Image (cartoon, rainbow, N blue to C red; front, side, top):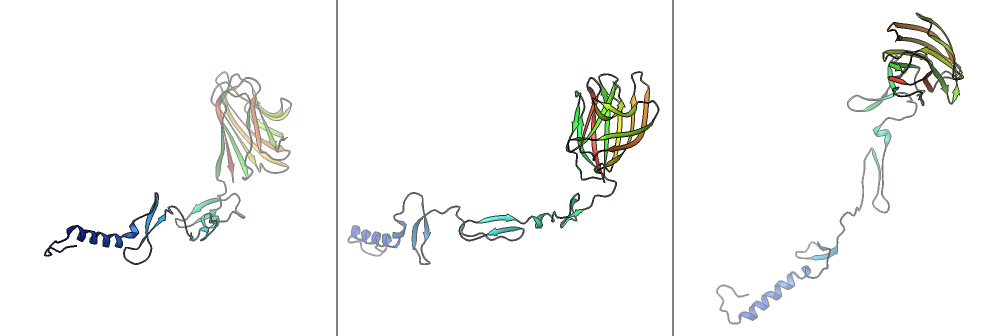
Length: 267
């Protein structure tokens, strides 16, 4: 390539010599094909090579707790050590997960605490079945609130354990003899009086409801009869035949026009 002070005597030839030098220095930039990428072939200046793209390829995975697995070849499996995230499940049935702001642990539910297990609407139903009641608690509290029915009729409650009928054996002290144990639709039942007013409230406490032989039942209620007269009752007894994991509640006729049943587990 001529310098600024050179006499140009053979311009085409001089440029040809310059171009050959450039072509030789950058020869590795030539060639390649669609989709390939340019990569360094060595630490030497201007030493490149065209190669196929390897985007997304992983050559090795290294992990630390609580992630497990990893590897540098073949199938790489990644898992999570659950005991590092959540404490061991063994021997902790019925406990709850808590934290001190740094680490998690299992806590014991305080005695007497209540947990809402289910909420069931009565409106429009003639027969309500509540199944799958948890067996993880000591007692059950059943609250029927704001109940009303299409006519002033008796109501029935039946209890079951694993598909087998249990028996109510009850005695009551009440203002008006509206509650008893008996037989509704052929089943041993607890019978209680309802009314059409959507303001009836009934509460049942089933003490030791998982007991294989019997549990103690306490009941109280408040209703407004067809004449608008408030009535209340209370009593107790036993539910025999194997505990409770299902309840069925229904009026003698007609349907519920209002109300909700809440079931709480009590420790």
